[in-house]
Length: 190
Length: 101
Image (cartoon, rainbow over all chains, first blue to last red):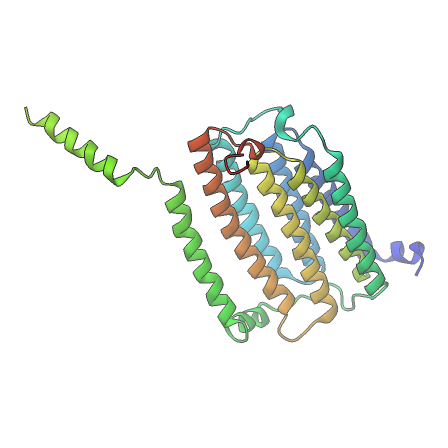
């Protein structure tokens, strides 16, 4: 298959329209000098990958991605940025000065994984593009064959919820708390 | 469409995430880079699912699991970053060298 054949398929145009902004936004996420811009570029990258999911027929997962990530996780990130007083605005110190080892590692991972996957799958065509998987199939799978991992994930979320509350609470030492209460009492007495 | 174009895109996204993970100093931006890596993995899952098309749609179900676990990871990760910031007054991962000798 030549490049001309590839580019003449309209679905590949749709792919490029989503893939190029996706890569550019991902590049902005890792290089932007502004933390808020990096988080908002992640919104853009995730929206583009939701578009790719729709192109591949995974409509339910695409909308879950939009709801969970763009709706909730990014808000959490922005809260984290604001609470930790991460430098909002231009900041040169956001990344290490020495970048080539990281770039080398990333480049070698990219060449290895992409070469291996192209070598293994070559020009395997995706048939019936854009035929959506019905949500019924996913629901039956989640509550049928995959019910055990589903419950495990639910338990994990509960544990993460409790763990998050425990971590982020301003946890006064119980002994100190008692001492403080006792001091308040003695103050109030006279 | 061929499956390789999605796989190359996913590995590009993953390696950009690796680059960000290694090069960033601020803990929140490190977590953003981890999200990028997970997005690459999700694209891989969905691309393979659209080739295999098994009756259970396992690829999509596992993408949902990845999303759920990533949400839990972000919650806990930001909680830890918050706690470290409160105790050490820094959000930079390279200044946290308490356990290094």
